[in-house]
Amino acid sequence: MTTSTDQELLSITLADGARRLRDGSVTSRQLTQAFLDRINATDEEVHVFVTVTGETALAEAAAADDLLARGDATAPLTGLPIALKDVLMTKGVRTTAGSRMLDNLVPPYDATVVSRLRDAGAISVGKTNMDEFAMGSSTEHSAWFPTANPWDLERVPGGSSGGSAAAVAAQQCIASLGSDTGGSIRQPASFCGVVGLKPTYGRVSRYGLIAFASSLDQIGPFTRTVEDAALLLQAIAGPDPLDSTCYDEPVPDFSAQLDRGLDGLKVAAPQEFFGDGMDDDVAATIEASLDLLAANGAVIDRSPSMPSVPMALPVYYILAPSECSANLARFDGVKYGYGARGGESMWSDMEATRQHGFGREVKRRILLGAYALSAGYYDAYYLQAQKVRTLIRREFDRVFAEHDVIVAPTAPTVAFKQGEITDPYQMYLNDIYTIPANIAGLPAISIPGGFGADGMPVGLQFVGQRLDETTLLGVANAYEQIARWPTTPSSNVGST
Ligand code: GLN
Image: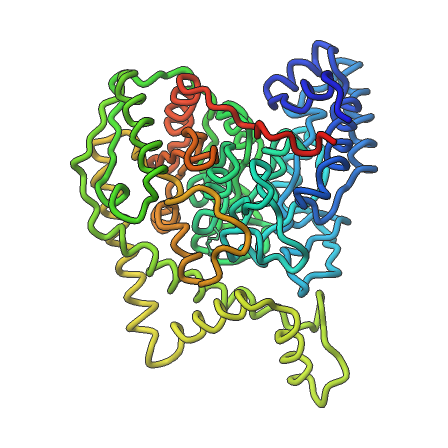
């Protein structure tokens, strides 16, 4: 049973938590224990955590309390409990990427984002469930179990970072990290009514992220507020000698424009993001959000056209599988992870390893990718997709020459029922509005934008210019402050 004081602690933000830890009105141990209790009370229903690291979390909380008591807590996130998608390497803590292939992987090192969060003082309560190797949009395709949506347990939380989104919505932690290759942060954020940010490609180090599609993958935060997303991004962003794809530029103050407001803001609403394919309830909710933006000083321009944007989804389903077929070649059962043994030869053991270690969707992607890259097809598929990718990038450049941000829906529907989508192509369509930003490498955020059918959350997406997360966060914060949508389910998960 949750007491009202616990209830108040569970809805805390990173910003509030940091203040309250410093003024002594709460301790990190109280906070961490409250979230661990909440995980205990709710995870039978929501199924978020592959691994809970309660003991180390409490030990780290005690250490944080000592620092706080001495006035030595200089790190900004000192003592604040967060969760990590199970695709991020964590030293000494099992890391599975939702796959049988990595059932027994206990990494000997931390991903850069993990060590940066530790340096910033944050405490991890555990590793969250995901679609296998981050391929999926529903978190039904984990090798372990499906995760539920805290707003309606019969529905999916979105994916592939569904565990990290559900953890924040179910109040099992204050914030979390996910990864976004084609929408895997923003779409689950939309389905679970929380904030999800995909930074600019190259803004955050991917060292220690189990790679899916290396020209698209980015790590980013799930939070309850835009202000918190800025704080978490601040902690993880910046150059890393261990990831040569990271920008070398100094990291700006991402909170600098949180109070910028909407006055005179030039917002593009390109036609291709508002065509057929969106459910009526989502369309109505997004329209209401555009009206709200306009009523508060933004100038909405619906005239831009981006004719190549509808090709982003097919381009993605050539490029991402191609890159995944190369990245996943390393899982051969020889050095680490699951390995079949005792066959006739090394080759038959490798075949058996991949046959049994990977799930159906992962195998489908590897096959698609190997086909697109094979001699005779490379020019027609992979090379052609790269050319269209360039066209899409240029269309974004053209729109941003005259506008500050782009506004769009995050997903075409609200969260669907578990088991409802069985056709892979239907599943892929979830990402029609999120994939373009990945293709162009641009920062994009999904924030709560209202409610659609059956009271389910609808996400509103903003896309920003390359490396301009500061403006993006400012605009998102302005909308959030005006709209003030609730970010926790009214249904009381775990109240019994
Ligand atoms: N749903 C998309 C896919 O299945 C995107 C996944 C992701 O962003 N990791 O590939």
